[in-house]
Image (cartoon, rainbow, N blue to C red; front, side):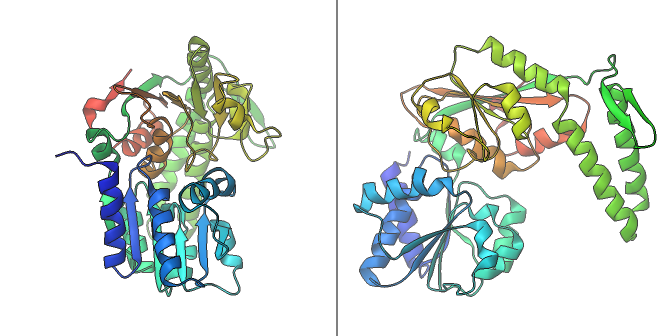
Length: 370
């Protein structure tokens, strides 16, 4: 039997109260985690009117764009005993509140920051997805477990969020044009993308063999891995493939996730990131233009109306991040809506490994490899 949104809200709330106001709600994006949080806040205020409540959010923009509007909508105001803080501010806390903590997007907390909440009496953790490693970390460091879980796939089946399809667009590294600056400060030269990737992979594999029980080579292996990763992230061939796709879809509303600010600004005239001078998100929501590019600021907590298509220039191997990005297009606005997620991937490289791992939670029938 299909669940309703109201049923999920009620079940999640009751699980939290029954677990002595402590636990993680792992509930699909677009189902109403913030609403559930507002109801829990109301309950806390009814029981403990003067209890300080700290709400930790990953990005400061979520305070004005998500949390305050939701509190006003469901509670009529932003309660005076609520203080908003960012994940990054945790290490700076001197008078750490151990009374009631709400940690939005708890999967984004570093292990170091998790230790700060280990002694908290009441903790509400919120996430839309959590991989096995993060589950292990929060359980062991925070002594906090998932007490209610409802996945994206379940929400699609129940008709609460929109269905979706994932298109993985393959491209090949350029093996003809020597346009990649290589070498070092003493001798530089230009090589093809393919030659550069093969060289960087060879260096990584060499250090990988030497790294066993050797601290120096372990460090060098990480450096080599990072250098190859940065090269993949900045592949001009892939970026140009994304640009070509966007040109073919210039009349459709598309949200673009880029690997960095420079690429975001190259892929679209309008971008939204930490250095943006204009609030292009508002204009995008108002359909003033069709394409908006971003980096990480729109990964979580933002609802964009009438968005059916997403383009991801670069995925990591993190399933949590992929789920968050995908959810930006899953708001169910009409019956039969199917969101289209377009991911670009470089064939025969480590990029394929990252993409397959990040999509491992999605049924094969929902993925097209093009």
